[in-house]
Image (cartoon, rainbow, N blue to C red; front, side, top):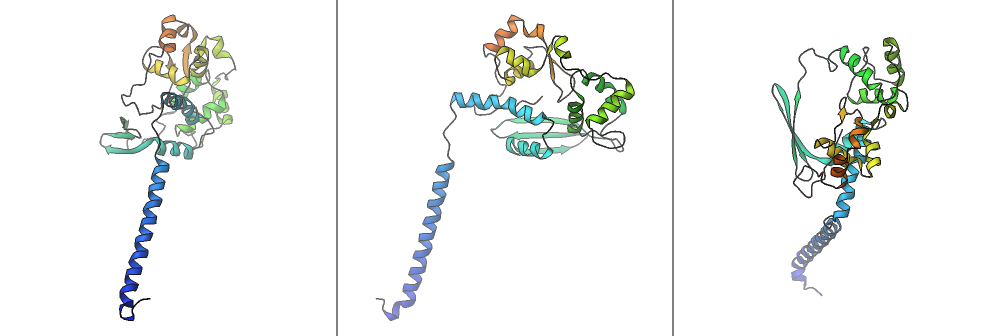
Amino acid sequence: AVDPDHRLVAAELERRWNEALAAVARLDEELTRQRTNDRPPLSPEQREQLLALGADLERAWEHPAASPETRKRILRTVLKEFIVRADERLELKLHWQGGDHSELSVAKNRTGQHRWTTPDEIEELLPELARLLPDQAIAALLNRWGKRTAKGHTWTAARVCAFRSDRRIATYREGEREERGEMTLEQAAKTLGVCAMTVLRAIRAGVLPAQQLCHGAPWVIRREDLERQAVRNAIQSGSVRPLTADPNQISIEFQ
């Protein structure tokens, strides 16, 4: 029993006691949550698996069905922040999750300049793209760049087909690349028994000659270059490594 003269004191002590118990409960929940979120460091095998996922991520990024929302989610995942300085050009500094930094310089559009500078750019690229991709894939590539038709429409397979027909540009024929002795990144990786990212690193390092018509277009690898013993030895021996010096940084390569 509490002395009537001390009821107010007892009530205050009880209130403080309950608040302290609630604080302890909150701290206990936070500790449990932190322990749950703490993850052990990656093993070499796990790290290699994550590195291999970079090639899958590249295909997801370039896939015709990938929406702008999907690419935004990818960027939010891999980028910590980016800083833009607007001068004569746009100077971007990208801070990646994991600690690496990249710098990118982009030309600014002049006043009155459209994103698609001249129709000649399409006239020049489309005949070459038609030797590599079907109409649907060409349309997806142009839309990813944000390019529009002369009337401001997005590209479709039918519009690419009409554009080709007006200019008598032949349509892509399945198997013609193989007839020319050319291989894609994925075909080269399958031939060598490695992941596509390994082949892409070899291209970036200058070990394997390859050509890419434009950003996002398929890499073109000559079969004769892939069959050179020096190239095979370099790729299959694992001597082509990521460029980052941070062992915990996961490299994600985009075409």
